[in-house]
Length: 161
Image (cartoon, rainbow, N blue to C red):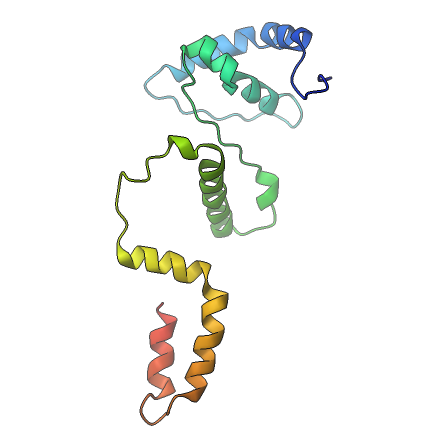
């Protein structure tokens, strides 16, 4: 696919994509308008799934199909997770979705809609700052009077954090 020097599709490419994707786009739009609009794209590598989805969900096509930009697109790249455990993959996907929302759709998010509890905020803070917090805490533990604060009582409490 050739692109113009600005990285955008040329008019000729837009016309050929519109012709190529006309029937699949009409069918896909009809499916998305159903109440149960679950979608599974499963086709062999290299046949154009990503190209079709990029075309269908770009701003211009959405406005043409739905009169507005109806969908917020989040791209996930499963190759990034291929050597991870299943549990890790779900964590990575959640992180990628959050990252995409915060970097590409932050103007569409109402941060004042809900409230977070102090314990939730504290746990996120501690998790994000663990390396900066853990070292000094461990050094302080070494200086504690073990008769006043026995390690066998302190360490189990720390493991639940």
